Image (cartoon, rainbow, N blue to C red; front, side, top):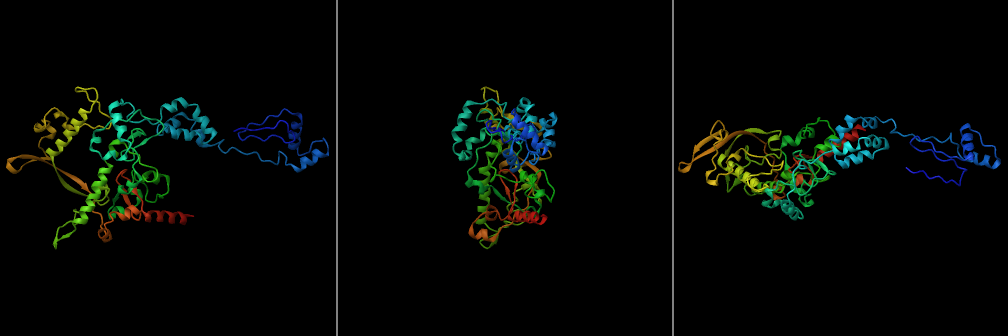
Length: 438
């Protein structure tokens, strides 16, 4: 703060600063005026000065502005080293800069630990991964158009596009992995935000919002509270913040989900006068929360082990071929997850049989004899399957898929960040509870 003083005008005493430091004025005339104003009497230098002193308020009449943050408990707490280090380890440089700009007391408290705080803020998980120039050039060449994610050739990208940043670092909204702005996906086009909606079943639609978030909150938590705003979907308001593995497949998942609803509209419950059984029992479209659905049930699932092992082996071969250094050296990113089938990385596709005991027939893997005497392996396991969602006749007639969820009339689930999207009824209940509390 700057205080401007006119040294030629001595009739008006200087103003007091806001942070406790008194102004200094070495003029004898000004000192007499200040002392006379403090005693409540006018200076004895003529009637003109008496009239001026009577017309102008004295120093005693002026209330000295108080600094409300002088005895603030938060400012004192930030001066404690363990507390400020715990806070700095959970924020990035931008948030730390905003925190230091709140008031002068907090700025002085953080300034004494400046070098240590700058080194202990959030770091990207890929900060120690070396930058591959070839992958960086290919990634930046496709990053100009957001729809490059739909290209299947980007599925083997596990590196980073450049040096990691420190100013914008946050957790992935889906998996919680800490990534910087260079390792996060490019913001999707606003027109594709409508494709992220997933329909919820009736139990999830009627459940309190606090039970649908992670970690669960109290059922009476207001929708406009800070805890709830951090837990619900904010892709449309605050932007999409996803890491590369989570954001790489969002467009493919959106197309698959829309294809399911198109197939449901084409093949209904009755086809040519015969009941197809579609929509009965567990044959409908499952809830968007899938296994975490409030009405989920346990069902047996059969998986072809040969196809699953071959798919895992292809992923391992792709990651090995893209490893830098040549030869047998593999430079995997922290996002790359090895598979148990990596023990057969050198075998050709026709000999993909692993000798590992954990992949042999057992309690979960069953050998069955197929057509022509071919022995195949089936994996039987119990999984939780979400309840079926309701279907509305108006959507079948008009072909408007998920119209209630896209317009915000009904509660839905975000297929990008895996968080709940409140509906119109939720906002109305929150506003009525807020007005009723007043």
